[in-house]
Length: 121
Image 1: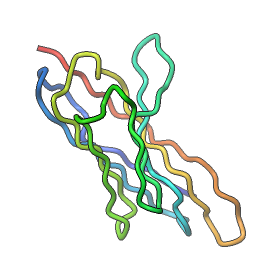
Image 2 (image 1 turned 90 degrees about the horizontal axis):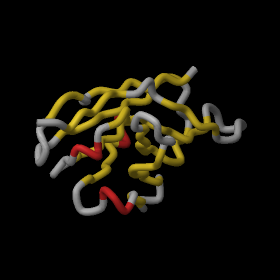
Image 3 (image 1 turned 60 degrees about the vertical axis):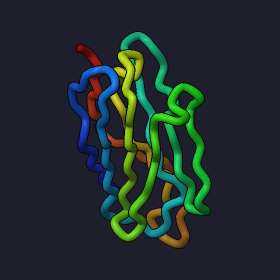
Image 4 (image 1 turned 45 degrees about the vertical axis):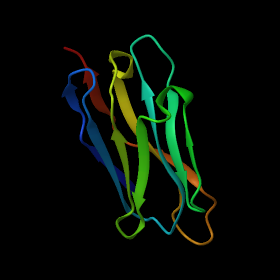
């Protein structure tokens, strides 16, 4: 089994900052990527940022320059530092991890339970 535990969401004023964390535990033999998606009410889930095991990262255009994704590989943890938050960043943020549980199994995608981020004055 694989468990993803997220933390760090909450209510923040426009221009403020939040830091999300997601820790993967259980059968995590090899992690290919760790990232964050978000889903606002009435909208589809969208990629926010992803970090690949080779070291590269991708960001949605809407968050470039404001959000930073990072990893603590020894802890199987991914972080999302969100600065200069805007009301349009309000959404449920989901951790997403692609990993292989054992050496002989192909990679699969796992999702966290989601954490609410609300940007409002």
